[in-house]
Image (cartoon, rainbow, N blue to C red; front, side, top):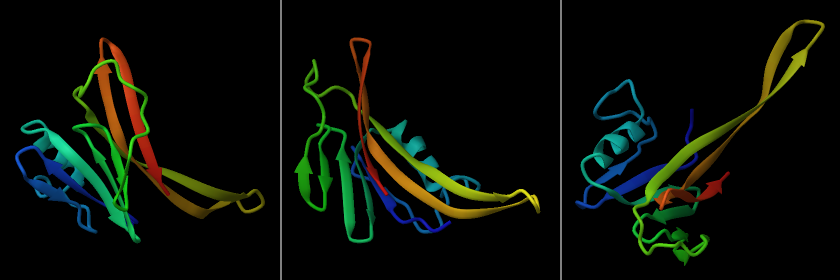
Amino acid sequence: MDLKYLFECEFQDGSIITQSADDVSKINPTRSRFFDVLKKDKETPIIRFALTGENTYLLVDLRDGHFELNGVSFDCHETLPEENPLRRLIFYRQHTHNFNHVPTTGETEQLSHDIAYCIGWQATISGKSFKETITLK
């Protein structure tokens, strides 16, 4: 699978984990590189997470919740009841497959495969969940 966007993750201790085109974990070669991010996050918090590719740079800063798109900073969340809550990273890829089934032959062919990349954050304040995500297609 060719990845349209690759991630770069910066941690509070200054270390950075970057995703390569082969998307293979350095810890466990049967897993993806994001596995390494999850393991490292247990040791030291993530502070910034970015997607890069096709002249696009999208970043989420978990310290204050702002996003950046190609160097332009913006907020898109409501006012939170607490200043600077602990934010957790949201990152996933959403796959959409379109198929055509030919009843006469019983064959199915894939017409398209689209991937949407979602990044953002989630925080829990007084038992209530708050989250913001941005999607790149």
